[in-house]
Length: 130
Image (tube, rainbow, N blue to C red; front, side, top):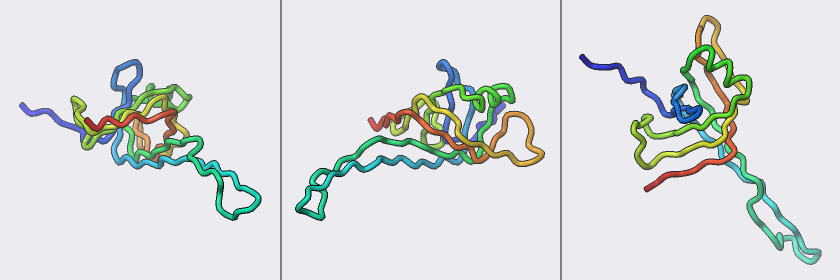
């Protein structure tokens, strides 16, 4: 007998246990620009990357209704993102650390722990490429 495999890009973890799966993962990592100018030049004398922001969206998030309620209440979580949600994880993949959900949408009639257009912000991102 074969088992059903849910197509996914992300697995969401709480205390080392997978609690949700995400499909359709898009990232937006950015850094503020720190620059200082000298009086005698139009070009910056100092140019450096400042504070980083790690945000992403997930098209569809699958979990239980109770866990979705906890995540929406601000429960922090970790997230592993890999091509096709490979399990066990093999490089390349990313670990998003100390994440919180900042925005979520839901289509009328969708019940349980299914959320759509989920926005997430992470404290840091670790890239595993070897």
